[in-house]
Image 1: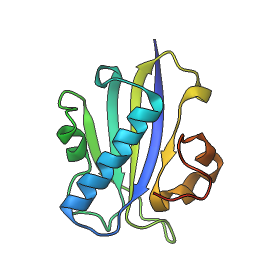
Image 2: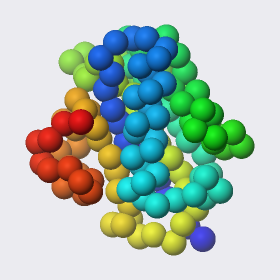
Image 3: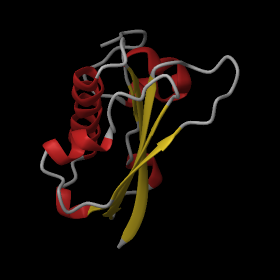
Length: 131
């Protein structure tokens, strides 16, 4: 069995616990739906948040979705001048038989600008459409 990484990112409007958790859930649900994996397939999940987001740990969203036995790790994103603010990034490692081309990385809301080359891969969204 292969271990593959699935990447995603999303932006929030405000630094509140409720918004960080709800927006992170949105991204996790989208990544799971688009890649059709089960919780048992997950090896581990890494979360990063920009320094302007400190009201909650994004990993709490995964716990609230029932990912209670999955190893989760939160960290702060490197502060690069001019980088996208209020951004949460996720790397999910899963056991699967998918090729690299079959993995669907998801960049939602303002984070769509990070990987314009991958935007047509997300089902149900048109290029330039923001959720």
